[in-house]
Length: 68
Figure 1 (cartoon, rainbow, N blue to C red):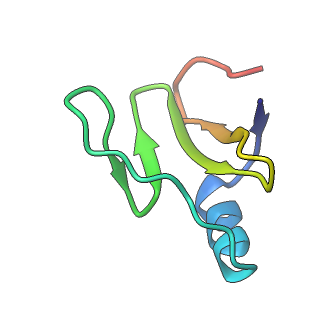
Figure 2: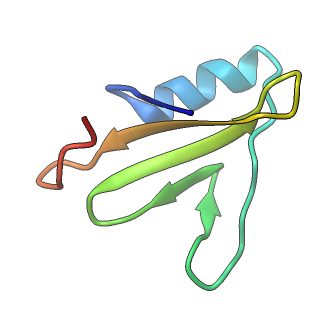
């Protein structure tokens, strides 16, 4: 499941301040910096809910393709 947000950095910061732990990746095709993965068209971050489900939050990068 993924949610589209207007300001991903602010949302990640707010959720972290509430105790949410984000997934961190350091793979050849996916690397997070401050819990956020950046690409040409989107910025994304992921965390797990209390049941272990992976939840994503995403923002379109200016000039990139729409996520909606």
